[in-house]
Length: 363
Image (cartoon, rainbow, N blue to C red; front, side, top):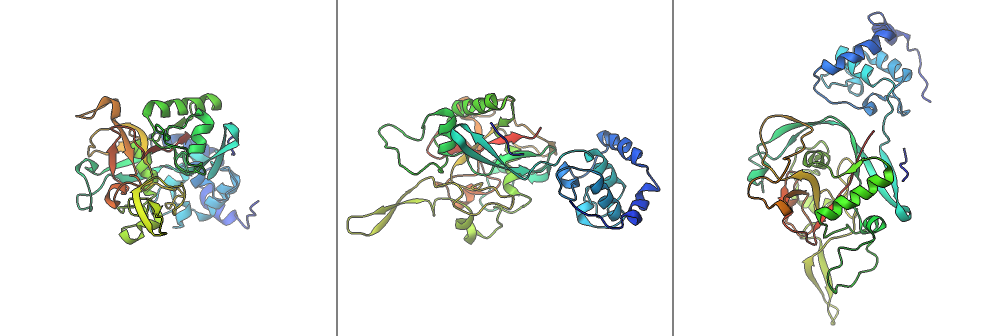
């Protein structure tokens, strides 16, 4: 398995003096160790401190940071407090020497089938929906702050039929005497069952030689879906734009051509991945198409802030043990209120609208 993984600086001395007269470069590294006990408001990655974009946090980035020290330049304000100051200096020190992950990578699956993935940087967000949100269900609250402390790669698209078949050599979307419909390699792998998804992921990890692939947690999924937004959908509050960004029950109906040439529309069905616009972080079909299984068992939310929550260890409440993993995002069978960023459902039984999206840990 293969994972696809000269800026000039003018007159830096004025900026460097601001920092160096207080701290030596040796002190820069020593102060970095203080981060283990420093509680800062924003989680950071090497990408945030790679100011010159050369793929590593190095002396060039230090010079740029020194020039900006004492200013309010937002790109250097690593802790988001409105000023480039000492806490930013400590955050930068921690990242010094680290490589920044590529924004987009491609994994080669068996048979040279490609799997595109997008880098999701760490950060904080408000999980769940407010009481005032239209279409809200009770189990979407209370809203609570969640910190995602480690960045990760997430599938740019839902896992497709071609990707599934390249690893598993099965076609679970064909039921009974149903004939295979040609040309659907880019459609999502649907009718997914939890044990089969686990096997798919295990095979990928065996090929990779380490356990890097998994499903996202429910928190990671919603964080990536929202992509920094707080609205009902990642594209905003305007319901007239849904068809541009989501496959749902009004734009996913099967087209039927009658003998007389007239057209009728049947029941909704899954559609080709990536056939609508992506969310702000470049992820397609986070709203609709197939409901995406996540790693968590179903469980109620609680109000306290959380760091990298994993969900319950097992089924909770009245949910069935055989069908209690959470599904997110809604499907092409669902109305607009069921494909909101905060919407959650439970996979009672596999059906034509159950799929998933892969996460790859960054190490």
